[in-house]
Length: 221
Ligand SMILES: Nc1ncnc2c1ncn2[C@@H]1O[C@H](COP(=O)(O)OP(=O)(O)OP(=O)(O)O)[C@@H](O)[C@H]1O
Ligand SMILES: C[C@H](N)[C@H](N)CCCCCC(=O)O
Ligand SMILES: [Mg+2]
Image (tube, rainbow, N blue to C red):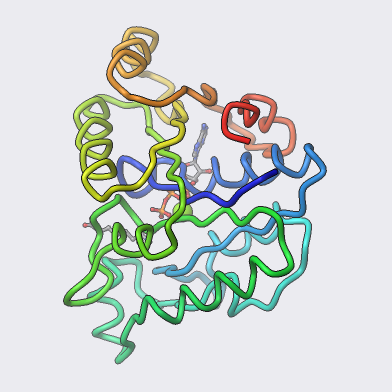
């Protein structure tokens, strides 16, 4: 049976949305109903939140926009600051309730975090509190670039400290000029306590349907 997953990453801009879309296609290929959720999006262009649009396009069930994305903040900055500027209080209970509404009609909800795992969402809570409240197994996207080894290991530590299960990681090759890529991936394979679900190559034309073949979801289903 497919479950739902929380997708976090080693940083902002390292491919969480991209890999979440690959995961959605990979689950859909197993005949699952799938929806992507971006509980908190910060940064719009022309009145659209790109992450939400991409996740919607990779979903195979239509749900109301406010279910996929309860909090849509305008500024492309840390969400607790954007929320404060916009007079919004991010309430994780609201996200919890929406997630459980979604779960009633969808087999697999892929929830994308915001930035890295400890990004604050309000004055008291951060993204790890959201993952904990949703009690979801976590998938870590590692943006393969210099510096990612430490970021990945720090993220693993905090996920484990939070008491959540890190069920898999994805090596997303975001830097076409990366040196010793294979060695870096091997270093992380040795040190991350979960299976590598796939190595996603750097691509100039991101075709998420085709690229979903690079992810082996049998390791987490
Ligand atoms: N494997 C890849 N090859 C080429 N481009 C990629 C790859 N992965 C991600 N990208 C590109 O890198 C950019 C950042 O990716 P993405 O938006 O998925 O990051 P993110 O971690 O979700 O960022 P955010 O923190 O803003 O949510 C996008 O333009 C995306 O298309
Ligand atoms: C605007 C960006 N693309 C994300 N939506 C928000 C990233 C917040 C990162 C905060 C931080 O860790 O400094
Ligand atoms: Mg994203």
